Amino acid sequence: MSVDPGRGATSAPTFIERGAAVGLSAKVAAYTLLPVALVVIVVAMATLPQGPGRRITPAGLLAAVIATALLVVWLRTTIRVLTQGRIGVRLESSGLTVGDVGPTRSRPTPPEAVSMHPYSAPWSAVYDARLVIDPAQVASARQRSAVRQMPGSRIKAPSRPAYFPDSGPLFMCKVDPAQVRWPALPVGVAPSHVWTVPVRDLDGLTAALERHGIPVRRSAPALGPTRETDMVETDLRSDPGYQRVADHLRGPLPRSRAELEAAMVRDLKVEPYLT
Image (cartoon, rainbow, N blue to C red):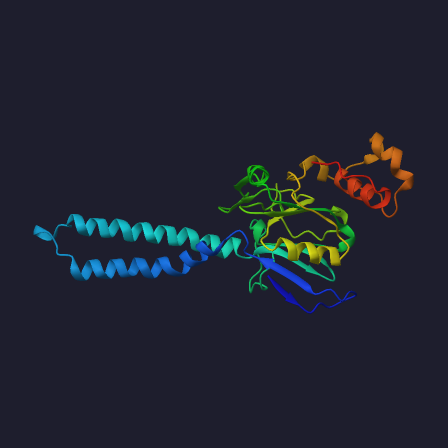
């Protein structure tokens, strides 16, 4: 987590936390397993004798198995650190950003790499913020993340960005889809207006959100990603619920049920009801 002087209309500092899903053990493994594997290989080549006819001895075979296992674990851990290590949350005067909150990449991110995009919303769009702490609720969110292979790519990622649950406590909130500037997403992938990322600094995040006027529910139940049908732009004039509240809403007419919920929460102070 880092705190920097904020810029903009408020004096609140910028709050950034990323890599909460990775953990210290994964970071240590990413930096140490490769050297350890190389040491095992060098020691085995320098000290272990060859069998008759240049055959591999049991000791040499054991060293090869250990080195291979170390390299495989190192590769998997390094990939996790490089991908999950950038996922987090950033709070600044302009609004909330989740997803990839690391330094700006030198190359454009392909649309199919959905977890490598930042997802930003102004504070006027953010509501129903909560911390999910119970391990059973965290596990439920992970089961609902629907990780699958992205269309036209070998990348596997959650199919409803920005819904990125992982191990440990989770920060969840809802946003008004109409106020979000969504990144380019691959064909067949619909975004969610429920945003989810793992976090560690629960007290710091809560205090930062409340400085921006966003109340936070602690130890709350997990939400699932928004149903795709609730995000689809449609004509809501045939929706009985919309007909009852249409005259009481401010701003542009909602184009989807997710936008309608956000408008009702904002203008009519109703409790969120989707998902």
